[in-house]
Structures are given as C-alpha cells and as structure tokens.
Length: 184
Image (cartoon, rainbow, N blue to C red; front, side, top):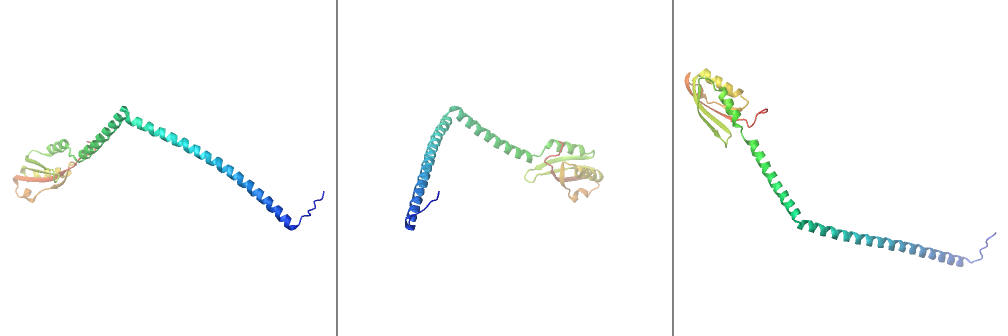
C-alpha cells in the first residue's frame, strides 16, 4: 500500500507541532505523577521518622529519670574519680625512692672500720648526705669505690677533705638514690 501525503507544508508543520505538543503534555503529566508519588513517599517517611524520634527522646527522658539509671551515672562518676586518683597515686609512686633496698645496700658495703654518724635525705634535691668516721684512708677509698659500684646510688660526690688524713678520718659523701632497680 502506498501512502500519499496530500497536505500542504504548512498543514504538515501544524500537524507535527500538534503531535509534539501532545507528546510534551503526556511527558509532563508522567513527570508530574512521578514527582507527586515521590513527594508523598518523602512526606510519609519524614512523618514516620519524626514520630520515631519523638518516641526515642521520650524513652531517653524516662530512662534518665529512672532511679537505677541515676544510680549507674553516680557509679560511673565515682569510678572516674577513683581512676583519676589512682593515676595520681601511680605517678607519685614512680617518683618514690624505695628505701629498704638502698639502706640494705648501704649496710652491706659499710665495712669494719667505717662508722656512719649521720644519714640525711634532702627531698628537694633528691640527695643523700652521709657522714662518719673511717679508721684508715684505704678503708675509706674502698668504701667510696663500693658506693660508686652500687646500682642503688649515682652521682657520688666526695670532698677532698676525705683524703687529708691517713687515719681516723672524718668523711662525708653526697649522692643521689636510684628510684627503682630492675628485678627488685
């Protein structure tokens, strides 16, 4: 079958324009329907979420007002305070000098012929000062050597006046105690 188009070009353009307008209107209607459905879905979702949020906030307020919850909050605060205090105690203990091993070491290295008169600790300088009497210079030098070799004492200072006499020497030493020794 043969199609013959007997319309004039003006009528053809008018017919194409009418078809285009119908197509545009139909496309616009479909987009409008889609947008309306989408907007309705968004509004219903928003409404549902708003109701859920309001209920959750109400439940949170109820739990906050609950006696057990308040007690748990108080316990948590107490635990935090105790933990802070324990951290402070731990820091202070790290700075402590353990005296028992240091004094034991001092008594072990003190030989016959060495007599300690005074033991003083200066906390501000973290220094120990000892004074005493030594029978001989050799005994005193050996005692000084033992102090220097000890892992419990560092920065040993001995004045030159310790070496002036040969016998019956009044001596003094100053040193710093070690805060802790590995393995003790």
